[in-house]
Image 1 (cartoon, one colour):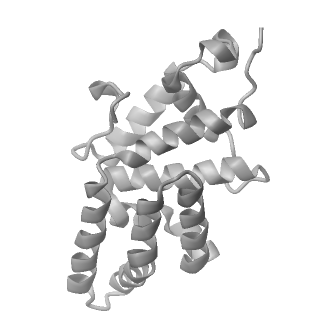
Image 2 (cartoon, rainbow, N blue to C red):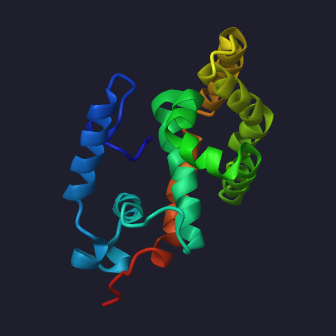
Length: 187
């Protein structure tokens, strides 16, 4: 993303432990905006970091609908950026299995459309359910690897062609909703 420093990005070469350590390091190094800034002094990066830090304080799902939306869409973004659909399904399968793929995709695409990420929603509507079924078949050793790999490549390539637009849309979304998640000093 344009507004992130290169050293602050998670890369595909990082292991899961590296990513976890990276996230924990960066979440702990940021002070809450209420500790040191007024609303009019916060940058987009401050807001981004504060929203992500605040999400760590919620037990998902929560009664706060905005927090649930942020959790779903940021999880999607993070997993897609780090490893594509396979990563998303691997790390978020607990939730998808709980609510069902149809409900998950309905919720995800609704949130994506709400923030203006229509192209991303279209990808999930086109490939999401079939990819999930093939992913689960692979887990059950049902010899679907070739089909899964083929569709996975198509879906992930379409995501990559959008060139990081989702990060910018998320930033705009976070700026519009952060006061519903974070108490900000108004001095």
